[in-house]
Image 1 (cartoon, rainbow, N blue to C red):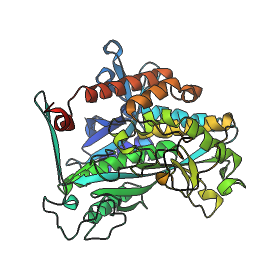
Image 2 (cartoon, rainbow, N blue to C red):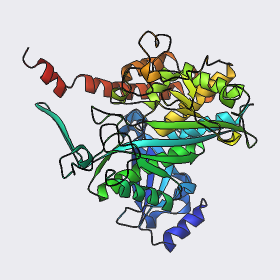
Image 3 (spheres, one colour):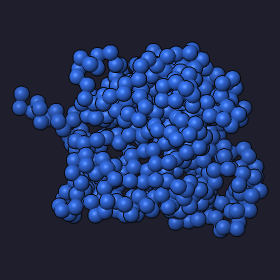
Length: 463
């Protein structure tokens, strides 16, 4: 449903009382503006609604604050959680004077990436799939002030808070656990059912490796489409969790011990409806696919700024934690940062990035990954030899020739500042957007670095 007349007819037919205009900021946080449904007409749907861009971190200066939220009518869905019947539409952020996509709008960036690909000679379509993890807790408390800084987590699967000692997964032993050890299967099933009712059927779900950890898999489609669906899924996960009295988080490492939460990104390029990644090379890959892999490897440390965009992200990406931190590729090998999953036919050939995490802004992360791969194709880069062995077990001297991903958000931002030309091609990510993004993230780094941490009192109080 994409015609304004159809939207207005739907509002009347379904008794819609409110319309919610949603968009994503630079950090990937979803924001919204509501309007009473009686005020919605064809002109408003065509022109959009004004917001104060100076109130969004990294966007407008107060002297030129006006921006437009322009709804993508094809994204309309009825909010299953709203007390008042509400119709939701995902919006692009646009310049009021020109109507063009605002250069710092993440969704507009993803659209520019797809348009750039469409103009390439070797491919005209990217197909994307995303699997992501999250944690569920029974209770989360956070207190922060000049003389107080603490957090506490409660989880039945970790013990205490009503947990059953006889039915808990062991450390890093929860993968695909069956109830009653998996205490969250019904919650995940409801999340998948809600997504199906919203037009995203066929999602898989399972218990993750860690206690309290969950995975939902199978968000698939075009680049912008999948990024929209990631944002929708995060909303559904938070809302369903709250209805069960739980707290959901997509933090990469909310618990100090055990595995972190990752977000696998799968991408493949197509031309005229045919896959381009299948061939006669390593793992039955085409030369074009290997060049795509080489491009992602070459820019991996800069990509970290988008795929692992929080200070917490790098508590997961630490050597020795069985996480994919070495920039290498291999077929089927889950210890490599880039993996070639098993594919029974050419249409399933794809490249999987295993280092991203679910705090990423999906529009920026997916667009940046695509641009890195395209740069590898344009420059005819070679990825070197595949690493068909368990990289988690390498001795330090064996890993010397393999570059690691960035070790901190500060390091990733510095890598992005030094290596971003591949992103600016075709004005997909204008330098203005990159600079604004780095500024927003540097402020986060500064806030974390100047705030005392509880472990510092453990280590240094008595000195």
